[in-house]
Amino acid sequence: MAAVPSSIVTRNMADFAEQTGNMYMSVAVISKRANQISVKLKEELNSKLAEFATTVDNLEEVFENREQIEISKYYERLPKPTSLAIEEFLEGKVYVRKPDEETQEDINL
Image (cartoon, rainbow, N blue to C red; front, side, top):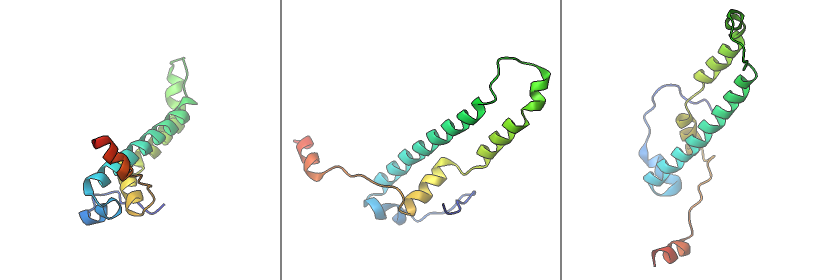
């Protein structure tokens, strides 16, 4: 995976339209991919934090949660799902499935 910029980057809109031929379709594809990445990261984080789940609340628990805090901080420092999705899309790593032209004609009739 290439380094994903952590700050705002100016993009050429023509780059987005290259793969799909339509900028708006490209934005929709990127949005769906960002949602997939977000869900995957959230499941990953929740599974790691589930190891620390306890039903007992006490003061010692606060001091024992340093590892849990480090895991949370790691996920906070990761690039945002939208940034990852944009990089994947521009690098051609996202598969775009277009509906059949014939199928579209049948639907419109």
